[in-house]
Image (tube, rainbow, N blue to C red; front, side, top):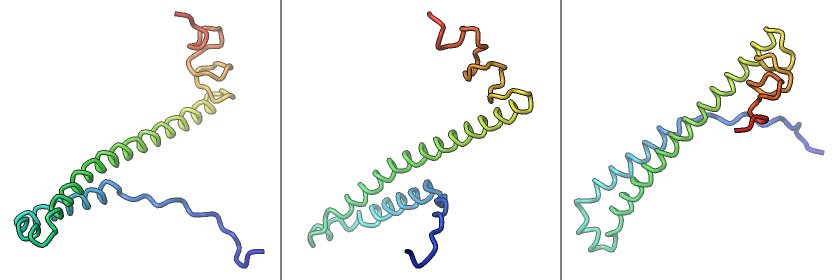
Length: 124
């Protein structure tokens, strides 16, 4: 028996991933530019790879920025589609449709009128 009551986990926090990855990418490029004039001294002391590591971090950050922007846009599209679906269901219930469709069909498909001309039954 647990000593504390179990609570449902909270929803995940939304963060601005694009800004976070962008800031990290800028820092990698700043470090590259700052270390580049000292390439000779760094090489003499066995640290000649540091500027190139910073450049690699910046380039990988650009890939991360592309990924985060694509992910953010996909999430926004998904939320818009869910909102549109919820709005259509709400409009369908206002129009007297009982199965959630707005076109009056009873077969559960969208766009078909129940007469065998739906996309699944049409032949090309």
